[in-house]
Length: 174
Length: 140
Image (cartoon, rainbow over all chains, first blue to last red):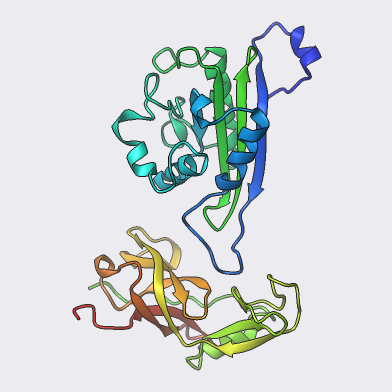
């Protein structure tokens, strides 16, 4: 991944995407009073959206780290794509299916079907988000007119000592 | 009927030696901050809430409830032949939620909120592993 200033980006012979907002957080064990019902995204989501000046309804595509089913469901809730506790119902009926679901998701196949490069799962999430914004995803799953994409990475011990990072990207026109 | 869970000896450190020594006599100790009274988990010499190094031991009641659990169907290492078995977080009456095993009941009978009490499984090396079993007859 190459990050450059807007001045440099102007002269590049390659479609670029913009970093609209980002945030990182670390969850800890809270002196043994662990809480499995939320993720670090509860902290990073609101901060990243605030910096980007957009909200969950503006997001056309999401890449979310998907180590386990519960990882995705809780992260979707904590990022504000649905009410807390409603994640299970939210993903029913093709919500996450690309290209025409309400919230197309992990169109590279995700960790199970495509990749899990050791501790670098977050990077692959960013790569597919960039492909979607450039219109370079696989034709079968390219989201039409994809303007805003969100990538979210989760690491560490899930729910007890996790690190979380949210990145919101937009096309050059956003 | 599955065989009893293995009880591999834990690694002991100067901070946890007294904790593990107590398990061998059937006592579950909890560290408590003498400064802010927080019950500390995992056991350590520094209070994670206020930073005080004035930490003492109290004996836990050994009672708690199941906060969450999962059933392992493919164990590894010493647990390779132990499946199915239950890994759980038990919320102690004193507050901390501790990672442990539930034993003495069928995995498909475990429920969140179930009342449990501590039992000790001898490692054969001067310590016991704290695990939990149902505190009341599930049929009642």
